Length: 445
Ligand code: UDX
Image (cartoon, rainbow, N blue to C red; front, top):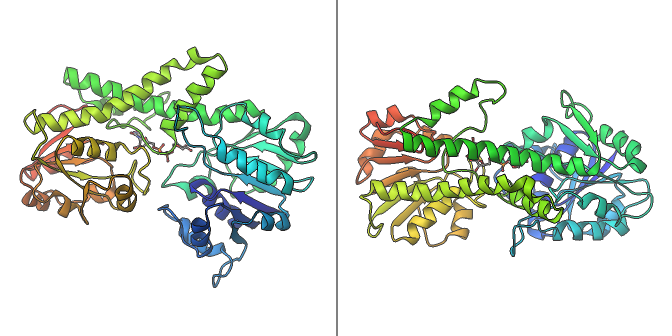
């Protein structure tokens, strides 16, 4: 079916989705209200670091030699109207509100307000943004007669956005009885092979589809905080959380993924999604069901402070004044330049605010880190960052850091002491090169 697709919002989710739709053979128009983003995308450049996305865009953005020309970008709602799409994907951001833990729906609301008068009867609007349960029902009321709505949450991970979009674990579609059949048919056409190949399609109602996303992220956050709670107990009892995670992970009912203990989760999704979920449950009178998420959040936030204390202790236990601390990693996870709610940058910032001279290096996150924390020092390489350091903190597990030469770094520091906040470096290799290696939730050697 030669469908015409529009994608509203071109962040991680929207830009990747638009490129994937073009890859599927559809004619696609991406819209964003931020002109700088659209200019970059139209020039085949991605406004963030996302492996493989630029290559995919180059294959489809109109105006490139050899490209399919199926993908265009605009800031104009009038252009979207005259494009006349069959399916409109809403992929805008739903950040945490500034005032409280609720979900800021203002971008979703403006997207629907702008879209409603411009979509033609018979077309389908598909919400992909992460929203509080109950939103889809309300938003459906804003669309004109004859325009359907489906809710189709997205589960992509930053750093794997292309892979997760082209080969999702599952596709979830929430529909209403009145336009269920047509919506399902259209989405089955959109998510034809190879996207849907091997991916189960779960068709359900609006609230369930909305809840699948927040439930999945809450479960992932719970797994991480669970293993971090075990790390705290290991620290008190002298156990080894890495071996513990390995051993419990062999049980298929538990599984070995998302059990990496360390300084905890961050980013633009897990922290704000669990908070918005609690806030929404409160509005629904079901807050008791989610009080455990408060504990998940607090275990997670505590890890950052524990990393600061571990650093203080290894430096002699008192003040950070006059001490030189090197921080490897600024992004909330590797293979991303995203520093939103980054545990690494938070730890670096806390230590800096307590008087240490902190020098940070990150393979891709330097520009964003500088914007968020301009008062930290930044170095152009790991070797430069550690020069003269009293202690080195490994806070984001980039492959580049696993491949460092511990002997070369030992020669550059004032004191070869390494704290691994991600349990990702080879302890024996660093110790063999003369380092004192300590990690969270692991015994001291
Ligand atoms: C997450 C979900 O995984 C994804 O399905 C959803 O669509 C968006 O939110 P993302 O935010 O890209 O994706 O990151 P993810 O890979 O889930 O990692 C989140 C955080 O958890 C990172 O800070 C990571 O370092 C941390 N983490 C992950 C751990 O601390 N330990 C682990 O074992 C796994």
